[in-house]
Amino acid sequence: MILSRYTAKHILNAAVSVPDEELFELPEKVLQFGTGVMLRGLPDYFIDKANRQGIFNGRVVVVKSTAQGDSSAFERQDGLYTHCIRGIENGRLIEENSINASISRVLHAGEDWKEVLECAHNPHLAIIVSNTTEVGIELVNDDIRQYPPKSFPGKLLAFLYERFRAFAGSEQSGMVIVPTEMIPDNGDKLQAIVFELAHLNGLEDSFIEWLERCNRFCNSLVDRIVSGKPETETLERLEASFGYTDQLLIVSEPHGFWAIEGNDDVKTILSFSKVDKGVVIEPSIELYRELKLRLLNGTHTFACGLAFLSGFETVKQCMDDETLSPYITELMLEEIAMAIPYPVAQQVANDYARDVVSRFRNSYLNHQWLSIALQYSSKFRKRCIPLIQTYYERHHAVPEAMALGFAAYLCFTRPVTKKENQFFGEFNGLPYLLQDEEAAVFYRRWTRLTTAALVQEVLQDDQYWGTDLGLLPGFGKAVLEKLNLLLAGEVREAIRLHANA
Image (cartoon, rainbow, N blue to C red; front, side, top):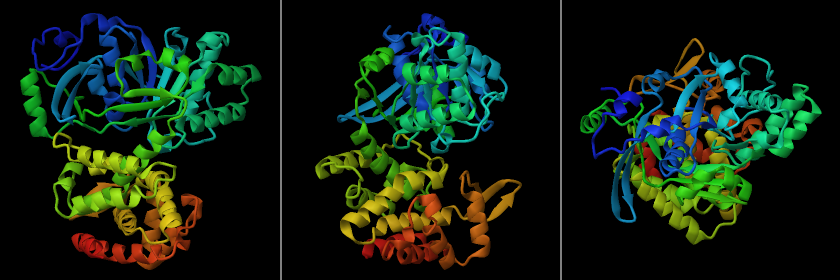
């Protein structure tokens, strides 16, 4: 049978925790932009956990903003999905399974925009959460009167404007807005864009005053490896043990951390924070952000191209490999931990890095490198470029592991074919889709430039990187040497030469 609200009543299985029927009647308190596994594996996990304990008592209405991906499973399963937590925590094996009932419904922005705006009239709604990837929080000259606006900030502003009008600008109608996109100061940046759009759309001063005075945009970071649906064999085994099928099943590690920048008022509204020490609400989250952004996300981004070109599909496979595992460990401990652009004690960075290495080795996670490579260029710019710069400032030498990661990024993002408006790379004769904002730029570059000229042009693109990487002594030469090996298919030779340098 297929998991749904009806079939959940008939699941009598100690292997999985089933939600009580009254949870389905809770009011919608959260508007969530995004259906991705990170949101379902962390914020929605905390909300469901709190609901089960009778604390938060609210559900999530989800807005699907893009046309990519099929959300019909949410309708068939009444928003329910199984969350399997697997791994080692404090020396103890964790194997937990629960049916998450936090999502009430999923609305498509393109088809259901009227229903999305109707949510603004809900007096119970108090929180907005988002994860639209790093490129979602960008300023676009958007008309918020479109159905719907093009950009995520445009959609958010249109919703807030509807909220303002629905409640006549009352102070109590303001929202707590918590973006989880992995960019520095995500709340501050989103707020600045929303205010800019309000002015561009000529909205009245009274609304802008309400927007500033009654709404709180909170910087936040999420830290949990959520691999999504496992491979077919594992999924079939899990479904057989549960007694139902689930197209939305996700697997995550036990570690779950959500740091939110806020005051006591924010804590009161985000009352789900009371049920798990993994939710931290503090006046500043900068230290947490830098450790996670650089050591976990930065390592992922530096390594994903090289790992994929080495023939590995998942992070765990790399950590089991005698060639890739030492590279990833060295990259993290000897270069990234030494170049975090924030004052952090070296021992704190090293301890965090070793914990991340252990998490990467989690045998239960099917964390795909191709998923990590989504919007590769944007992630590299925001996560990795500051590390390269800081390493040079502190050590006045080429960070060789980072240079190899940069070369692999260039090799991975080399479009071989173009079909309509999509670009594809190629590995072992098989195409892979380049879901990257710079794919068209790279297609033009690889078509007209030699490899040496391409490396030079990319490094000197200060408009994109925010700095001229060509000025870093020896970096261009190191990247070119490594890239030539990768283009020749000598991926392991490039890693071996790096290890022996």
